[in-house]
Amino acid sequence: CEHCEEDTSAKIDTFNRAIKFTAALDDKQIERLLQIADKCPVHKTLHSQTQVITTLVP
Image (cartoon, rainbow, N blue to C red):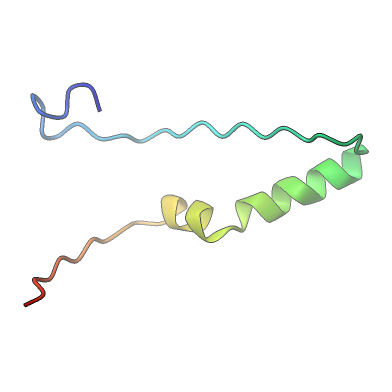
């Protein structure tokens, strides 16, 4: 982030997701696709408490 070097406690805690559908979809189809998007592994990881474990590899 812009101030990460200056403030080591700075965190990015908001992600904006923009989804564009190129086909005409009804409300039910859009709702279902948004449910699927919320189940992707990246989305789940970002919503959970993340732990980073670093190991040195010889």
